[in-house]
Length: 242
Image 1 (cartoon, rainbow, N blue to C red):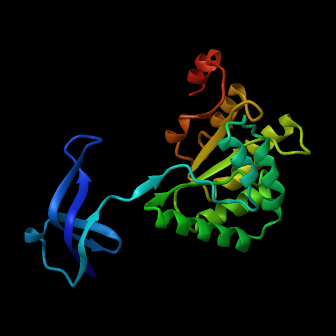
Image 2 (image 1 turned 90 degrees about the horizontal axis):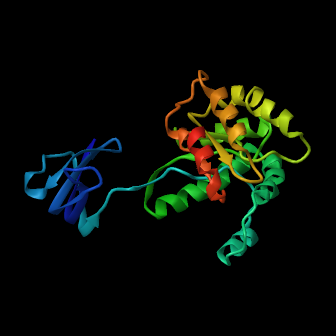
């Protein structure tokens, strides 16, 4: 069924050039099955099955969140407060969430994600990616990715978040580029890696990125690596890795 949204005082849309916005005054918009079919001046709007008045409001494009961590249990509000106070950040904070996430059922992860997705929608986000990365074992990463796929097609495998406690680095690198990757590709579209002090080195990152090649993941977007808190002298290495 086609629905026309009318009585739009200002409708913001894309301009003629990339990055530009345009505003249509006294506008209307036609939607069918969640997709915008037409927008423009209200006087030129086509006939539809239903008409909804927006009462002179302003309509803007939805925001896109391309980096969302929704698959976790527990919380790290104390760490967040420290970061807002300007204290140094360490990737060790990630490990505090892993144990709780491993203990969480699929339903618990699902309910937490549903709550967070509602917050995204309330903030104007209409499309989002979801990363894993708080399970850091085969079973929990697979469970997290499977649940994430219920909410978005843009699911990212972030097994290379940190090396979890109780496992040697080389063993974990073998796991995350082998068995864990094989399970992840059943649900994930992208991969990501946390290249930072306390997490994974540039050489680790190269190994991880090369392991996914030919495994069914989309390759281009994740070439831009997540690198934080590195020294300026590391810039040439980061460019080489990307």
